[in-house]
Length: 334
Image (tube, rainbow, N blue to C red; front, side, top):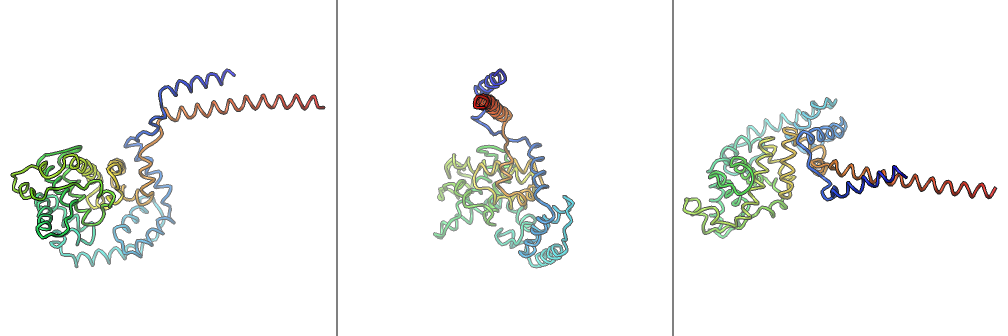
């Protein structure tokens, strides 16, 4: 009984610290990087990459095919990439001849690839002119009685606020500015999810937009401060994603964000995986990647181990007692 008493005493002490109240803790950046890379290596064997490449070639998806070829080289997988390389050459060659960069700059939605967005649209959209152009589009739509993209205009406001060093929550002005512009471009490209849109849409007093553009009014006069702070926080997280990966990758990764919590987790993953973030999501999927950002705390693991040990010891004692009783009855019967 002594081992059982000691184990129960240790378990009782452990439970006084309430380890199960917060059983999960965030992994450190280095822990997360190792965990994700190990999972990718286990999942992405030659057969998996070959099947994914075949799908990318059939869909004429040059960017995804390039990522998969790089993944095969990095993991030293023996995969035939001839068809994929031919498709990539055909697609990129045709696009480079057909795309008018000025048209892509004027309307991000017309850009045929994320690379064109990066080279053509980003320099303009990252400037104050891009923000003012978005507000101009919204103001014209209101004047004409047309439907207004409130999220596009709201993100332009956050970006303008960051440009003027008006930071409502989290991040530096550069990070918030980059994240807000990224989300605005993602909105026009269709990579911002409807779920996230509902979280970060802010009300706008359209009658005051012209005053903000002219500098005679503040951003706070246009909308609700709390809603603006929430959008600013998400923008800051997406800015971290862009800084850890690239503009093109961050635009693509935005489709995995359905809430502000997802944006924080994505930023954590991007800072751990860096340029390998896109391939990590491609191989493991959103659910597995986000679950990897947390682990059971040592206190929780220790408490569960003590509980398991107490159950095993109690079962051993009861088993020995019951076995002895059965043996005595058997001896009497004989």
